[in-house]
Image (cartoon, rainbow, N blue to C red; front, side, top):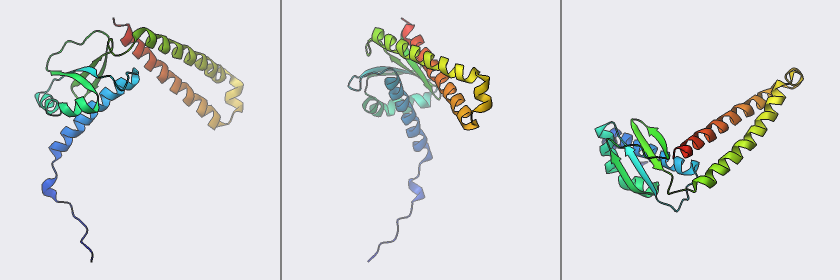
Length: 175
């Protein structure tokens, strides 16, 4: 005996609830991205401050605060309409919401700066090699187009990595 294939019931589809949940997911993802970017230990609860411009978004965040606290390892969570950005805090924006994660208590700032500076020096050496290759007129004329494209792509990737490190160092220098 076979049962009929289930059919969706349009009465249970709620676009507004889906939008609110997607918004919460983006906020949680942003907090987790900040934690990963600055190597915040997974076991450490992070203090997070969220400022809202929109009353509806604030209500959505307040309603979903338990999800944020649990899935992004946040404690305490401060959601308000007007919050002064803390010193040395990483920031990301989602919609009209600004998310601040103060880093001073979560990471060893000195060690993190040293690691970032070492990484930056290594990337600069690699960038110098790539620039030397690209600057060589014989390379562009004799190398296959795929190889030229790969080297140019590598240069763009190195530029992005250096920009990311510079922005991280700028946040850590705000003390």
